[in-house]
Image (cartoon, rainbow, N blue to C red):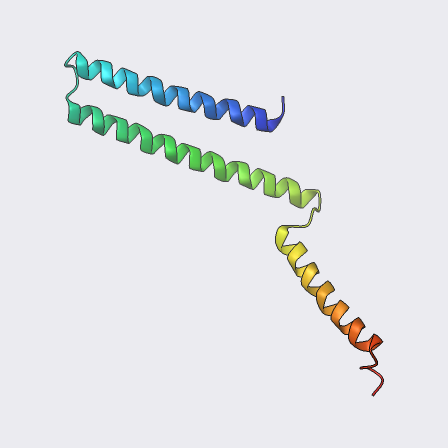
Amino acid sequence: MTIFETIRKMMLAGFGAQEKFSELVDDLIKKGELSQSQGAKLTKEWTDKAEKGTADLDKSFGDIIQKALEKMNIPTKEDLKKMDRKISALSTRVKHLEDGGGSK
């Protein structure tokens, strides 16, 4: 199983958990054990914590990927943009020299 498959399964499990939580809160409201406002507050708190956990996981995963790329010495998108700008500048200079601009 690849890391992307693992992440996909974790996300799907998270969505399933959110749906089950909402169903649980709805059942408690129907039974009268929670008021509508209590259910809404509880759902909001749970959603906020889940979103924070997802953001933390995303940051951690991003950090792991970044470190792995650094260890493999793979150029970043910004590195490639810098090289492209340098190549363009050098190409312009070479063309200028070929056109006789450098002999005077």
